[in-house]
Image 1 (cartoon, one colour):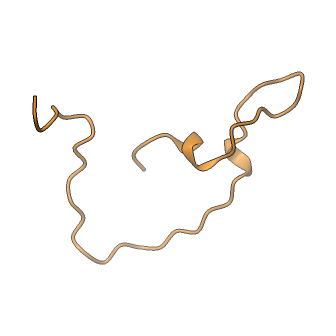
Image 2 (cartoon, one colour):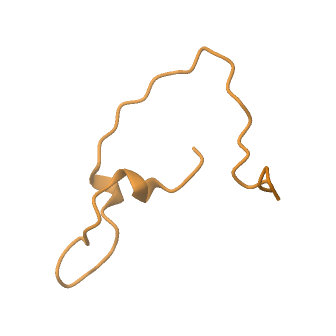
Image 3 (tube, rainbow, N blue to C red):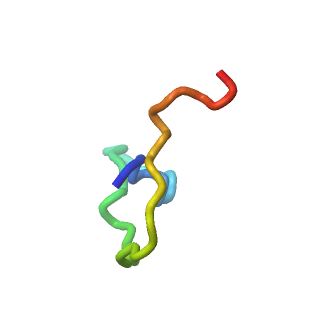
Length: 49
């Protein structure tokens, strides 16, 4: 997985006392990719740089 898992969850803390991320409470569905996947370029230079 590339990216931040917190983008899949609501922006709220676990409680009023502890403000940890609630990332482990967001079920998602996944499936295998059968097509060719393009390379991940998020960490490369910008196209217009």
